[in-house]
Image (cartoon, rainbow, N blue to C red; front, top):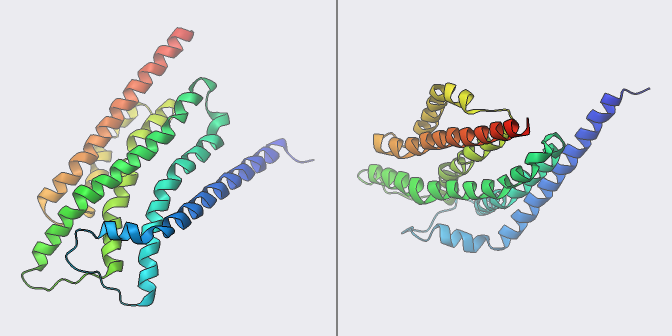
Length: 242
C-alpha cells in the first residue's frame, strides 16, 4: 500500500510541472509576438547611435534578434510566472492574506520595468560614454551588434531583477519567513553583497560606483521599512483576533 505522503508529494510535483509548462508556453508565445516587431524594437534601441552596428556572420543577426525578443518575453512572462507561483503556493498561504498577496503580481511587473528603465536610461548611457571617452584617444570604435546588445543586457536585466527586492521581502514577510529584525541584522552582509554587485557591473571609476551602489542600498532600506510596516500590521491583526 502506498504512503499517502508519497501521493501528496507526487501531486505537488505534478502541479509544479503543470505550472512550469504554462509559464514556458507564455514565454514562447511572448517571444514569438515580440519577434514580429523585433526590427522596430531594434531601431528604437539604436536610435542614438551615430554608426551602424556590424555583424560578423549571418547567425549574428538571429542572435541579436533573439536577445532582444528574449528580454521582451521575460518582461511579459514575469507577471504570468508570478501568478503561477502564487497559485502553486496558495494552499499554504493563510486565507486572510491571500487576496493581499495577489497584489504582488502587478507590483513585481512594475518594479521590473523600473529596474530595466534605471539600467537603460541611466546606467547604460553613462557606462557607454565612459568607455567611448576612454577609447577615443587611441582607438577607432566599431561595435558589433552582438557585443553591443550583450553589453546592454548586462547593464539592464540585472537591475530589473534586483529591483524586485522590496516585493520579494514584502511577500516573504507576509508569509512569516522574514521579519525586519532579521533584515536589520543582515544589513552589513547585504550591503557587502550589494557593494560587490555594484562594483562588478560598473566601470572602474568612483562616480559610476556611487550612482549604482546608492540605489541598491536604498532598495535594501526600503525593503526593511516595508517589512517593518507589514510585520506591525500582522501583529496588530493577531492581537485584535486574540
